[in-house]
Image 1 (cartoon, rainbow, N blue to C red):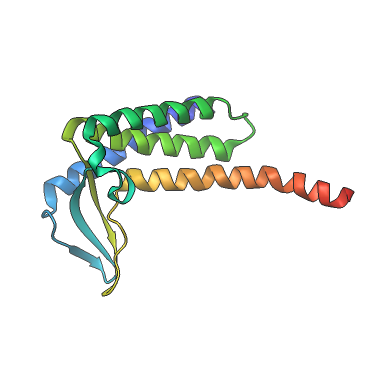
Image 2: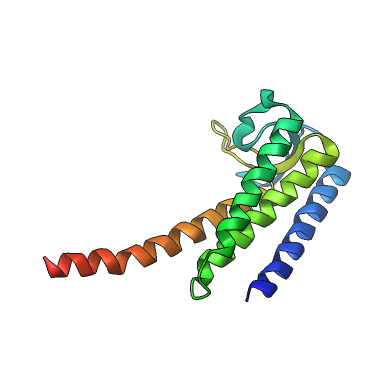
Length: 160
């Protein structure tokens, strides 16, 4: 299973990098291209992390931090029991997204973002496919943990 997930990581990184190349090649910078009324393609560069936080941390600092976090995620992933397939998939998604954004940061000095959900009075942070992988992966890991905890709490409630 883990070998298949490692292949999945490679494929997801490739999908992320191709999507960013397409966005950079075909979208105007800082100009919304409306796809549907609440979703636009909007090419921008993020020099920070999520929601542009830690922008002043510097590129090298963010690269080192991302490497450390990614290494920790891989460490945790390796400790996941084989029957926890949702958590394993979650870690594969998180690692894929982290590496995809790390490639941008190391080669470009910023992360390429281009998805924008918005209304006439509100806009969500611009993000990319790697960010989506990270969020979906985190949801999968938490869902697996909640599924594991539920039987324990139901068992302790029935013993009371």
